[in-house]
Amino acid sequence: MEEESLIIIGAGPAGLTAALYAARANLSPLVITGNELGGQIAITSEVENYPGFDSILGPELADKMKAQAEKFGARFEYSSVTEVDFAHGSPFVVRTYIAERRAKAVIVATGASAKRLGIPGEEEFIGRGVSYCATCDGFFFKGKEALVVGGGDSALQESLFLTKYAERVRVVHRRESLRAGEFLKACVNENPKIEFVWETVIEEIRGDGAVQEVRVKNVRTGKAESLRADGVFVFIGHFPNTQLFAGQLAMDENSFIVTDRLMQTSVEGVFAAGEAQDPIYRQAVSSAGQGCQAAISAERWLATKGGA
Ligand code: NAP
Image (cartoon, rainbow, N blue to C red; front, side, top):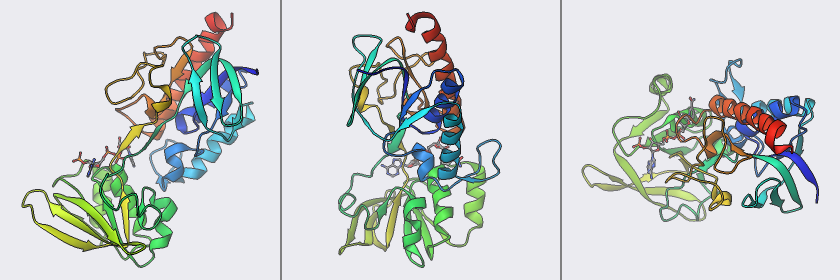
């Protein structure tokens, strides 16, 4: 079986930055990308708060990070990890659909995925009006009526993006105040295409082949009504992609991997970075920073204990 020095699982900002630092430390890391190079930034429209870039498209930022890591010797495999065995210590076993490998050290950077509403019609209309990615699907709503769910930064940022195409964007939020930051709030307030539907939850998505309307309820008055919508874009937060490591790495009550200051998990030689272990900051730049920390820690660990 092939044995690697370091396998990085995931290729969002955390995994890609870990790859850059590990490559520059001559570890020739193998990155197993998972479904999406770039992770969540791959499905983000414009990134305007990554230092050094005034504004850059998410996928472009991911491509730049990958190219930079490759330049120094990182290797990429477009596959998904199906199973790991961390129980027997280093070298650790990492299986994908195509291969089984051993690695002296591992960095887990599997990120987080969009939460779903869990209401009738949601699953049924995914790809036919229900979306979790304005960048991917906004184009299909030219001149149409889009509805966004959520009151955080993602909901507002993606609403702004949707106004490039949609005739009107209605943001349905369950409270009467937004969680999003002041800058995005100001931009949204200035945009005449965006309207808010406050203190309201969606109870059902309906249509005939594609989304046509949603049933909503005002949580204060209890009043229910239908809103016309061609698209429903859901931005209600994320959950960590850590199911693969259940029972093998210590996690908190919300399934975030527990790490120490060195990004070390409960298993010596396995490190974690980014949103798989960060319930607090969840920014592209903080994930990148944690990827850097994990790579430096992994390198030091390999140089002392792990290389033995
Ligand atoms: P978030 O901050 O967790 O916001 C989720 C929103 O969805 C909240 O408004 C929440 O309502 C609502 N929500 C949650 N569950 C719901 C449900 N079941 N039904 C209806 N509404 C529900 O998530 P996010 O907006 O994806 O942001 C994640 C992180 O990324 C944050 O740290 C954010 O700052 C960051 N981010 C930053 C930027 C930027 O700086 N430009 C852009 C995107 C994301 P409540 O408010 O009532 O809880």
